Image (cartoon, rainbow, N blue to C red):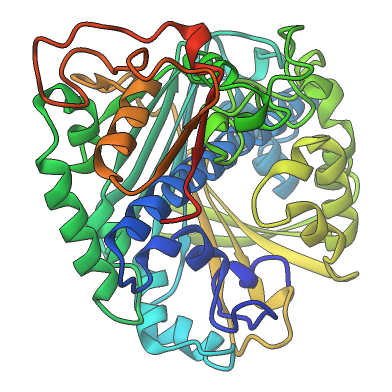
Amino acid sequence: MPYVGNAGRHKSAGNPRETTASAQLRFCQPHTDTHIVVRDLVATSEEFVINTMRKGLAAAGVVALITAGAAACGNEEPSTPQGKVSNAFIQLGEQKSVTLGLSFDGTPDQIYAALKDQDDFKRADADLIAGLRVSTSFSADKALAELSGDDKGISFGVEVAGGASGKSEGKTLIGLRSVDQKAYVQVDLKGLAALDTTGDAGLSDITGMLGSVDQLPSSFGSIKTLAKGGWVSIDPKAFAEFAKTLGDDASGDSASGSGSGSGSDDGSDDSPLGGLGLPSGLPTGLPTDLAHKTFAELLAPLQKSLTKDAKITDLGSQDGADHLKVSVPARSLAQDLKSSLGSMAKVLPGDLQKSLDDVPNKTVALDVAVKGGKLTHVSVDLAQFDDTIHGKLPLGLSVDGGADPVKAPAGAQQLNPQDLMGALMSQLGDFKVKADKLDPGAFTARPGQLTGDDSASAQAPADQLKDLHIDLSGL
């Protein structure tokens, strides 16, 4: 079941109620210890941020692959079904930006009817899923069809919103942007906690934790901004360098093999918070096996499925748009997509590679909408992939070619790795610090961060940090 595993609830040996979404948001579950909430908050929110950024990067790359390949196919007769689809992608490839919106094209009642037999799936879960929206924006300094994998002028953004309905876009829960090799993050912690449909204990704990953040010294402005839902900026390279200073014992093997400066096979550099044992790093580019190829080269397998192997039927006009049914062999398309993604298929969250391998060997249909010659919407019924779904469960992808380019958010505060370290040390009073060779007075955050004393001025030298070991096991 390549898709529904992220929407329905499936039992597992470790936790019979845990889903992919709940695993990423474990801090939303009831806790009795505020320190545990803080610990889980840092780890799980970072994981969610990283995973979402990877999804955004992958989506942007796939769109660019498709548009570049479609343009290379040449013009078809626009009056034919094949011509309408081909020319719509050509027009999209001529744009310098595109925004994709992903959501279920159904009411809560329809979603519940389709998934009610999934383990522990409740009506509240259907309401939650129906209100979720994920949008990915992608822009460049040239037409999408002209891009190659190693172009530097590429920006992307991801937004996860909840509570959407009808014409309402809902409230942003996660906002992420990557502009000029710098990442920008916005998180609504209370909104994320409210996603837990099992009760409000998690929300209460988050409220308490936010209250403690308010008590931090004023020098922790970026931490307070992040906790209150404002934008902060992150330099992935700065976090990676900071992680290296914590030494091999704190960061595992994160420093090994990183001196070349080249991208890693999984599309990420050293973890920004690798020194704290947190998940892998923020991606700033395509994996090395993709970055040095043109999109036309990467597209070849996928282009075959979308052209030679696809059957396109004109379904007529609805709401001013031409609707076309595109039927493709599902397993063939999945394997061609896997080939096009290269090593990225291994690192995307949700075990995408296994999901692609498990696609049923059958023909599936997509509904493609073209309005004014432009691609505007693609919908696929997930029931085609899972016999346990009752009725239809359409997943929709809106396409807005020529949308506003991705820009850095105004007023974002710089979040430095020392800020996170200082906040952890200030808040978690019962954690253990083991410093084999560290001068007890050597490590102080920037003025006033640990004690609130504005007269503090010492700054820990980077070479002192390599002997710092943090044990959070007692929390």
